[in-house]
Image: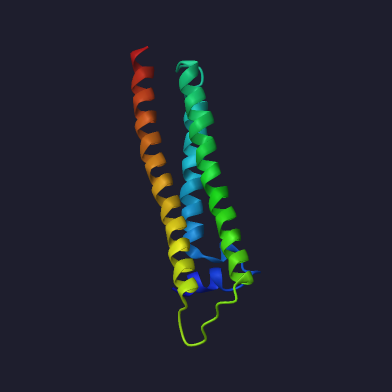
Amino acid sequence: MREVEKFIGGGEISPFSSGSFWAASLVGLASVVLDIYLVYRHWHTAPIYVAFILSTPIGAQLIYQWFRVLRDCAKLRELRSKSSLEDTKGWSFLDAIERASFRGMIDQLFYSYGIAIFALILIGLLLSRLDGLR
C-alpha cells in the first residue's frame, strides 16, 4: 500500500519508485529478450513468416504495453495534480480510484507478459522440434 501512495502521491514521483512496476518491467524485459532470442536462433531454419510473426507483432506489443502503462500513469499523476478533491482524514473517492487504476495497470502488465513468456516458450519448443525434423 505504501508504494502505491508513494507512486500516486505527488506530481514529481516516478512510476519507477514502485517495486511492483519494477518487477513487471523485469518480466517484460525477459519476454522481449526471449522473443529476440527465438528470432535470432531460428532465423535461418524457420520459415520467414515465423520470424516476422515473432519479431513484429509480438515484440512490438510487448514494448507497446509497457509504454502505454507509463502514459496512463502520467495521466493519473496529472489528474492528481489538477484535482481539487482533498480528504484530510482518509481515502477520498479519487484516491480509491487511483489505487485501483494503478493495481489494474500493473496486473495487466504481469498478465500480458506472463502469457507472452508462456507462448514464446511453447513457440520455441515447437520451432526446436521443427529444426530436428529437417
